[in-house]
Length: 320
Image (cartoon, rainbow, N blue to C red; front, side, top):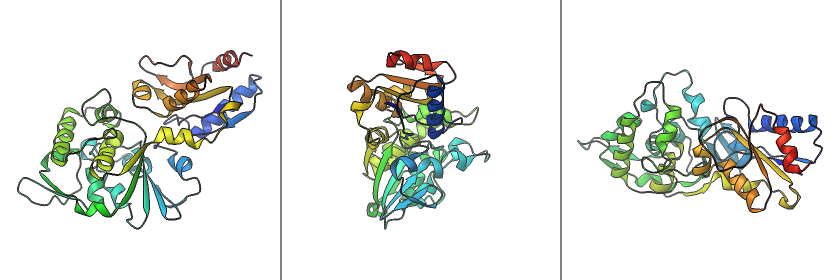
C-alpha cells in the first residue's frame, strides 16, 4: 500500500487536492498499488478536518462537537482575515480569536497559518486579560505589535476560568534561538516593514508578562499566550496528525507526503512533513517528499518538485 499524506501547498493546492493529483499521476504511470489517501494538517489550514471531522461549524473558524469546540486560528486571524485590508503586521491584533472562546466549552485551539505577530496579547485581551501602561492606565484598544512596548503591568486573573488546549504546528521561540517567531514574521509582513521593532516589542512584552515554553514562537506568539501565559496543555499538531492517520503501518510500502515550501522550518520546527518522515523512517519505510518550492539543504534522501517526473522516483522506491 502507498500512503499519500500531504499537508496543503499553500496558495496552490489543498491537501485533499494533492492526494487526488498524486493518485492520478501514480495510476497514469502504471503504479497499481492500493492507495490510502490521507490529507493532513498540523494546526493550520485543514485543521477542522484533521482534528474534529464530526464537528459542526457554528461560526467562522469555530467547530463544535459535544461539549468541545475547536477554534482554527488560520480561519479567524489568518491571511484571509486581513486580505486587502492594507493593515501592516505591526498593527494587526489576535483579539478576534480570544473573543471567539466561550468558557462553557472545552476549547481546542489549532495554532498555525496566522497573519499576526502580537505575542497573543490581543487573544489574551479577548479572554478578559487587562493590560496597563506606564501611568497605570488601562489599555483599552486591541494590542498589536506596535503597542506591545507600552505594556507595563497585566491583570490575568480572568483567564483562569477557560479550559484551553493547544494543537500547535511548530516548536519555536519568540525572538532567540534557531527558529523564532521572527522567521515566520517575514512571511506575514507587508513589503518594506521593519521587523527590528517587532523583535523589540516581543522581547519587552515577554519580559513584563514572564513565562517560557517550547511553543512560544508559534502563530506569531500565540503559542506564548496559550502555553506560557494561560498554562494551557499543548501538543504537537504534527505528532497528533500522525497518530490520527490510524493506518496499519505494516501494510505501507511507500509514503508520499509534502508541502508547498520545504525549508529549514520543515525540519527544525518539527512540522508535519518531518513528523511523517520520521515515523516512516523508524519503520524503515521509504518516504518521497513532494514540494512546490525548496529552500535550504534538508536531511531527507528523497525529495521531488510536484511538477517533475517524480513517479520514476516512486517506482525506484517501490523497486518496480
